Image 1 (tube, one colour):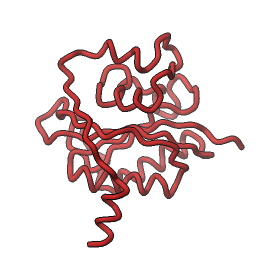
Image 2: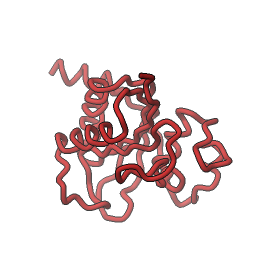
Image 3: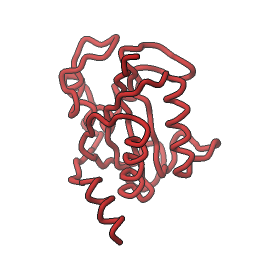
Length: 173
């Protein structure tokens, strides 16, 4: 079976450096990690809370979409997500399936491509960093071109962070 190319969005605003680093390590344990965008800081949206750190990763998997969705949900639960978690709230680790191959539509409750790609800078900018020329299903413009449509009010800042070095340092202490 040929592997599926999947893009995941990750975010955290509760101990984000530790949770995102450990989350990436968990992702590597389950799937082939192809590439990791830079880390971006942005204000919480829809509630008052600490700033979020977000990034996008490309993975390859032989799992089906429902299997992948179940596994990402399980990882979120392992990191403290509760079933009654509000949409706009602080997170130890949030993992969103942004795309799954070229699928378009709603599959087992997962809408693809994920709509937030097109209107949230904290998703679109790191995604465009990984694959600027990518044109998603139902779109006519590349990810980098879509960035021009983002509201100027969405402030986002790239943060230099080496998650592997962080994990190595944490393991030494």
